Image (tube, rainbow, N blue to C red):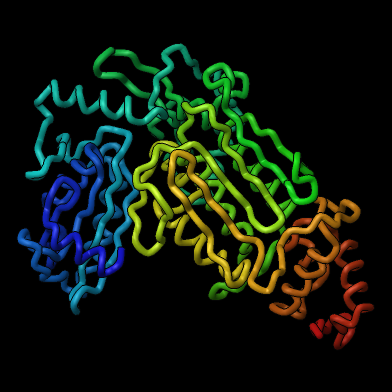
Length: 472
């Protein structure tokens, strides 16, 4: 959010989707009642440092970080917010004062805080814990709005892939050493992740569509959702059909892996120094694109999701339940989770970051990967993501001049460019280390490319065995 958007919210005042709290020194005791109500209703903005009449008092600067930490910690504490929900806070400088903005999306689940269920209307937050009819309607609304919550009462634990449970535990542990999934049974993990539901109107309970899509066996997924597939297509020379294709009809964990492998196979990489860390620009961009393609799609619609690599761009598209139509502006948009349970699962295993960060990261890294370009995110019935591959000088990132397969099918000049990038950053790096960093060719393959670069006059060796390379 920028200061202009904040000014607009302040002028409109409190309402169904906006709540003000003073929180000058500490978080208001009833702040989580508003968070709970927003999650249960339509989502909204919690603005801290603002009086009820919209006047900005600001949060005392020395207290800002403690309040932000309090929000993040308590949102992930099931004793405070049940089920927990990942939230982030943004600190905005407004007229010389600090305002903390917390965007709370609509959740697909019913939440309670301190054991009480709150709902929202224009007048504020209301405790409906004892209002049986209202609670029932709330559960019903969530289940009809979010298809990922659809219950399949005859699904059994044996319908899920056993090896995937070990995989997600490992991924979760990589993100957090003490992740609670490590000590849970498979059934406990499914329930903990919100993949087992009870319908409070019909009494029906069981594993959900989200559970099947994330961890189900392939034949079970096809029996539940026969149209489920994601198409990965390379269309550079054969524009009528395709040059390469992967028809993916499996769970979302392995779908992600196959889509990333397809991108790595056909698109070059650039090594980029961010602080003291070297990162892969290609992986940073398409991690977000593929994450969005799988997470924010309406799975009950038969429209197949696609990732299409063309000569000048990459196009990703999937059926969508639009919240706001049109082109997304990264400086001023409200992230809206289409499948919050699936999104939270992907965050637990490190496949995505906080809600909304994907769009901002893609804008950040795309302009470095292909200079002078910007990605496009277009939210309509079909959500489209466009990543340009052609810079202003006409250089494209895609090539179909394939060489011998060494590990993965890659182009000779792409490997050479990668090695040059590595040597610019670390001239003393040896062949084995370069091969480890690339992950695509052997040490002998690196030796071949180094000799070729030397013959072409692009590098020269200084100092013998213990010396270093100089990029010319």
